Length: 180
Image (tube, rainbow, N blue to C red):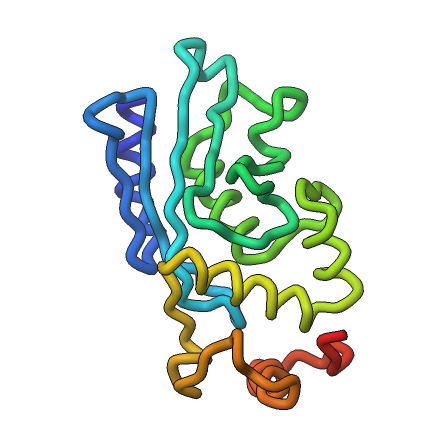
């Protein structure tokens, strides 16, 4: 596990990626990174990883500490991430690959492996409502820093539908233009 820890640290995940052992415990890691996929670009995500004493024969468990409205994360911060599910886990899997998958999944949700059905339904049928709820959730978590919203100097909780649409138009999204 120690070697995996240093491999992840040296992998260069960027975007203010941090990782440390939780109080020096090699079986518990915690860290943070900045989302890079617009429109949630700039949100800081805190996470934890817990390893079994049977690692690498059992997968690590990921928890998202930042309150996030996401199809692959439930209210307790547990994730549905196929690469670390018991049926897909390979003892030869490197933590660098797993971390890359984790960061990618939080940036681009995978509706086929949903954990939060309401977020998944909104993500698929009404992306504007989904992004609005994601903004709201991040705002409540008080780790909120949104590139697009900082530029606009506005609060997503008080945005008109027209203002919200202009953000998505700016980012090149061509989905239906309704929050309802």
